[in-house]
Image (cartoon, rainbow, N blue to C red):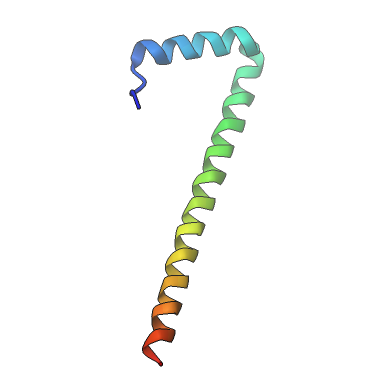
Length: 64
C-alpha cells in the first residue's frame, strides 16, 4: 500500500475544502477524529477480550 506524501495530502485537503467549504471543514475534521478514536478504542478492547479468552482457555486446559 503506498504511503500518502505531502503533495497527496495537500490535494486531499484542497478537495475537502472545495467539497465541504471553510465553515464545515472543522466540524467534519472533528467527526472524523472522533470516529478514528472510537475505532481505536474498539480495536483495543477487542484485542484485550481476545487475550482474556486465550488466558481463560489456557487456564481451563491446565486444570484438566
